[in-house]
Length: 208
Image (cartoon, rainbow, N blue to C red; front, side):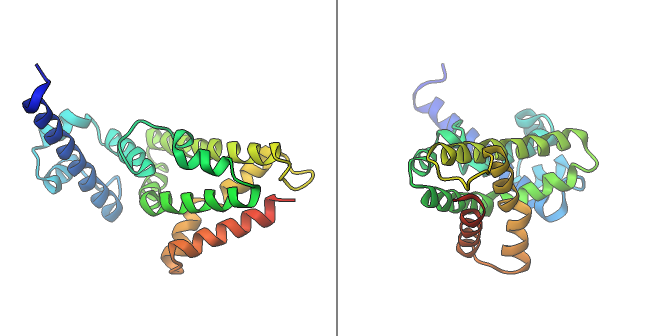
């Protein structure tokens, strides 16, 4: 039996161990890069046997993929971005406010995940499976912003003559993790300053 206090305690311990391994992987991936980080190094950093790491994730690529999913969501719940409460609130807002809410949420997500996405982008140059993960992430980000630009079009908010998919391309380009890292890292902008810039840029480029 897996229920009851003992089963619950085992599940909680397993979840805590999994989280510790993901945190260790994040630290090593972002400090040393994906290629240079070994499974043994992750296990040592997490304080677990390497066999435990392999049993839990099987491969280093699987660790990176799960880490990316968790960092984007901010939790381990299997709920897509567009199904979360913030998305419904933003999509129901007037056009300018919709874009501001989208920029604020994107800044919050990038604060967690941009460094991990840079690991993925860098590793994609030499690892075909990681390259596919990178392409999938770009497609997912485009899907989210296309829902927003479609909603803007439905509200009559898009600039005249601007196609919703071209608007989505524009939004994707403005809110890239690379731009976020450039401005908040190299140029030392705050998270809020980046969100304000992204929102103002989107409003100027997309709205009528």
